Length: 96
Image (cartoon, rainbow, N blue to C red):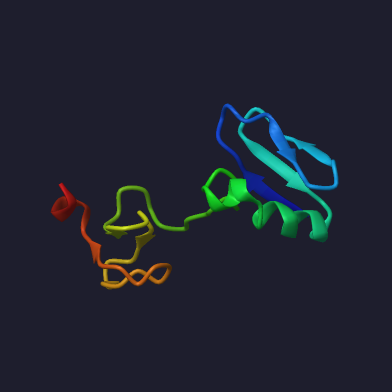
């Protein structure tokens, strides 16, 4: 079973086979079929960033972290290169 995140104004995900998965009020879609999950993550909506897997952080809120200039990935303070897109990561103070 996989949980995907969609924007708050999206009511669900429809896959090419016609199967529809509804989102809850928090924008979460639960898909229990691995094949359907694969289709959802490779869809054009996922390519535009509308459908994604939720991310979890075990970091304390407000703790120091670096942010990717290109894709906004949040990483550790010791990371200078983004592991997702290989772009530069900076501290939030440097960003502004």
